[in-house]
Image (cartoon, rainbow, N blue to C red):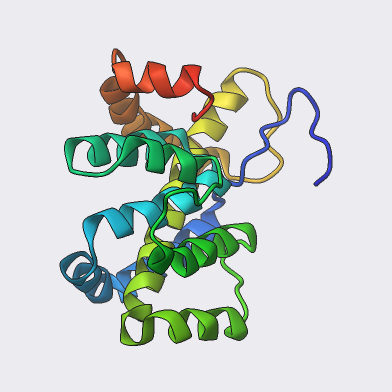
Length: 197
């Protein structure tokens, strides 16, 4: 990875074309996503989402998924490990899906057929459900980063990819909601202090 200037926003975010492409993909897969939430374990879904988030570095997704895990029955140490790209304590049955989520994020969604084939070998008929979760969290991660890209522009940082218009819209609507939810959150401050955000 090339070194970034001190004033360059270094996370992947959306431009109008990629945002539109992914919205269409999500719309096509909405039934599969609904089925995934009905058929897959909630903690497994959250772990897949955290694995993607570890690569894409969306602070909103990291905070939101850890918060939902704490409110549920997920283990904070395990969630923190995933955000640090560690599989310590992770059930072995989850590791292929987490590795795929990481690969999907690193390759910006351009995974090879052989990568998907490995996922099918591990999960069989549940693979389309896992794929839909990976696509959904990637969309969430990049949307969160697009909000932060606009904030970076406001602070004088250079954003080499993206769309100022889309960034403004997401920042104005979704960003306002996220910032209000996170403000005053002990979990947010704890995660920030420990370097998880």
